[in-house]
Amino acid sequence: MARVELVMPKMGESIMEATILKWRKKAGDRIELDEPVLDIATDKVDSEVPSPVAGILVEILFQENDVVPINKVIAVIETDAASAQPAASPAVSQPAPSNGQNEAAAVPYMPATAAVAAPAVSVGGSARFYSPLVKTIAKEEQIGQAELDTIPGSGHDGRVTKKDMLAYVSGRQKGSSTAVPAAPAVSAPATAPAVPQSPAVSISGNVEIVEMDRMRKLIADHMVMSKHTSPHVTSFVEVDVTNMVNWRNNVKEKFKKQYGENITFTPIFIEAVVRAIRDFPMINASIDGTRIIIKKDINIGMAAALPSGNLIVPVIKNADTLNLIGLSKQVNELAARARQNQLKPEEIQGGTFTLTNVGTFGNVMGTPIINQPQVAIMAVGAIRKKPAVLETEYGDVIAVRQMMFLSLSYDHRVVDGMLGGSFLRRVADYLEQFEANRSI
Image (spheres, rainbow, N blue to C red):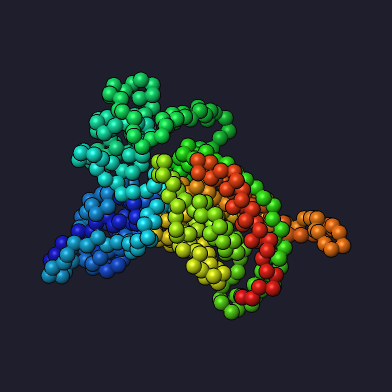
């Protein structure tokens, strides 16, 4: 008999812990090779953990809802083999390096926990473990290492959690903390504003109280963090997409027959966005303190709906290297897997710009919230027939055209009105100049 340790797998870049959602097996159960043993969740995606060996599950070391660091032993499996090596049993393959692009793309969706995601490490000379989110809060609130080490933790092995930090910061602002204030962080350009307290809510009367699920809580935190981090500005432009609509209506059956894919408007939008990013590369960036990081890779995130009604943002990597056929295949595949909860962690990371389609819900325009740590997000509205003025050689005429609104929300720390407006207008120009006789 040999005993094999099942450890918490690393679920992608910057992921340092995961929550156990459900044990599919109990102690004493027989497990086959690659059979799912438990379900886990990170702030990026949910996944199954398969068994690395066949045998009997003899010991479970953590319970459901426990937060466990990666590479921590979570169970022991006894096998019939003479010898066996402990294995991590990764639920997904490790993402390949992407030329220095290590940032997570979070969601309206699945959120990132810091402006620039990085592996959680011990801070300074302390042996205590701190996650990137805790370190970010400490930096924003100017909490030094000595003060951070005094904060009691309610997490696993006494780890300081976000809840602990917010409670400490709240008490600190009220003067209840006796710790010596730390010196201002050198890299912080200004003191972060105080976290506003939620207003009291009356629950009397005819109401129904619904507890947020895990993903909705993460989305809520990410949205508040984004608005807290970036000064949002939104620009709008109206676009005549008649040529694009007519072309798509004319070729969709042939496209399906020839390539086995449905051609939607999303890959056409992405194609125009990619071309505009080449013209205005500062849109494809993020901020690290006072440094602007301009991304050479163009990785486009697209908002997709989950069965639960929440949204997730799968990422099309190196979208500038794909033609319209390749973009269509990527869009259809990622959207289908999102609906089936089958996305891998690396497929929702590394986004540099996000596109969201509010027109899917019949909305004509929207003011989307930036998907941190990116600096811009574009929303496309519903396409509707409207009367429009056309200039002809015989004078101006009014005609029925296919019209839509584009909106761009951008981080005013980096993107000024001229850059944001020019980029948005360039996307509109590419859509309006779409070739009505384009071949497939």
